[in-house]
Image (cartoon, rainbow, N blue to C red; front, top):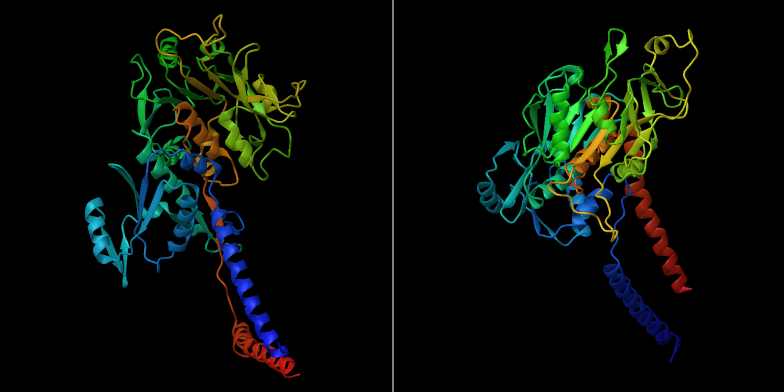
Length: 497
């Protein structure tokens, strides 16, 4: 065999080996599929709690997406849904372009009751995503996918987007697969936070966040009537007046009969003294001690820069499963004007989070206002929240004894309500939103409830001058073809030699 034939045979064998390697690589890749998110903040990586919800699906879910490829949100939603499909084979996605698939879109639009309108030459669907499972369906509104932060257009760091898509999509999947909506009753009648109110004591921002979790809010005035059975949980948020023994009894009976309660207290000043809540005796019987004090965080590293000293970070998080999401996410909680909430020694209650060791729980209001006038109170880590859950006693066989009647429910007590303010819930660098979601999910005993705080990204435009454009054109039009020609000439010359 001459040299020329050997060269040809070598080229043929090399090509065949390369083809075999390519096939093997594709086969291995198909058996070990993986995806990577290269965005700066992991914008398209599903949260652990979303993955848990998806992996727990026991029924098929169909997602219809009515977005055209020319729409600005198309690529983001497509990338996110690819993550959903990669986690579970229970989800199927059908993409319907309102313009290119006009007939199919019209059939589904009539089926789901969806309207559309023209924006120039593009048809926009009023509801871009519909999630169904069996006979149940849930519509995801256009504003729930990607929300623009219009206040940031003039920012030097670039325009920002709130990526709400994961919250909306996972919430819709839970809605069509987890039964009836959950209801939370909001206590009223004692100056608590209210729905429809204005200013700092409005519960509307919290209600909007809980709507993402498919939780309905219903007001309930605590007097003598029992808490409705339809309430999966009762929230008592910052009462400004002490509740009577009868009113506390209403809440206590609800808890004893299997209800779930959140008590969020603030220090309330009455005649230059800190007022009690009315719940002290009932809570102590369950192993929780609510302090008649004002918590002062003295660690400057925990105080919010540029703000009054009553705003402080909480980063000492406990080990209860209710706060696992906060531990994983980090970022800490921001609280203000708190009172202590401790556990009674020997009880089964557990502290959720504490201040730094430099804090004080001041019972002397005058000393709190003028700390230099008297001997300062001792400093130590002050507990700010506690959780209680009924634990059935063990019998002689070391198995839980079944209680007669309904088992008591769950209880969360937090010595502050300001952590639920809209500014703090909307801040993605804080874990306040995670605490709200975890508390709501744990109390309503919907462990799969998820909350993904909005993730900020920067939509920065590429600004090019005329010189930059000319330089780019020169590189693309001249340098790249010239480099290819030089490489080709080099190959030809080596073969000729």
